[in-house]
Image 1 (tube, rainbow, N blue to C red):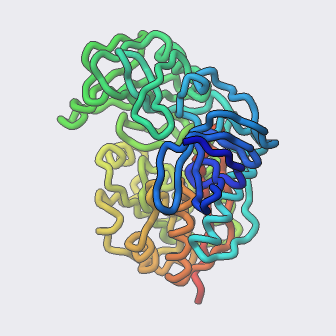
Image 2 (cartoon, one colour):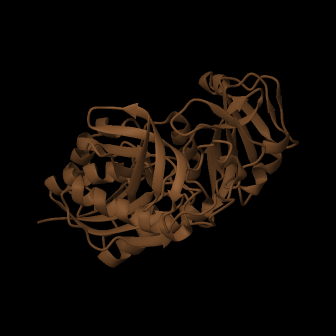
Image 3 (cartoon, rainbow, N blue to C red):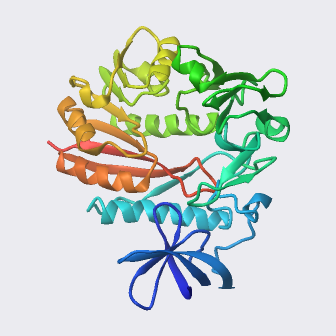
Length: 396
């Protein structure tokens, strides 16, 4: 069934939002604000529907021709290729502000915006599906794969891996490069059997890592060399990681936040512990991922106490500052309670999902913290993904 719909907003997750004549909300992937569309209903629920664009009757001001040729083939890897740079920026700021108001019940200060890395060729880690031994991305909201021979947001060090690589019987691969060192690594899921890769590319299977094998790259960020293993999380680019550290450092400096104890929750390979952590006499890093803990042990100095456990199971200690960089689901109630028990006067929260930020904001406010500053760091151009740095001050 086809319907004509006007798009009036963009939702968390990147889809366009319209309303049908029966009052139901409709979500449309690939839409822009003020688009007039004819869509085919592909999913119907009692309170909302989803549609697929059949025709753009009238394009909104923010719509443009996608920069990547694979979008026309159905690739869903970058959900905002069809939006202009200005429209992407406006939408990310609006999404974060709306999440804080609607989900956090907070009237936020002005939401700042910090441009991230280049809008193309910036990603140093990508995860792709495999179709007939070759790289592929999934269609939007689908498990169907679209084969690609290049990727315009992937770092140039991945070009020949996309163009020439053959990945055997793997169903997915993670490609990771060190932009400033030239290191290159491919991890196959579940195995790396029968891989054919350009010279100098390290390969490992996820099955091997489960048996204790390891492989890593070295990347340089903020003048420090970081070991990053195949299964460890790291930011999308070294430039983005440096901007993230700079935002955190700037806010802590403005707050004159103290120099005794820093608690780094969801600490990963140690990015914050090994940069702003140098300001503190004692740093406590808490991380559950085994590979990240192994990397952090290599990356960090002796003044950092690394706790290999889930944040929710850590016994809180008093702190001057807490920095928390949780996964996409956010802190949730247990994470906020851990922060509250540290009695830290200053907290920096790094959120990679606007909805999670909104929910965490409500919990932080209930836990006695007031939002002082919030900035969108645009680390994922051409996509709806956001990275948000928010500074919180404990109320007396």
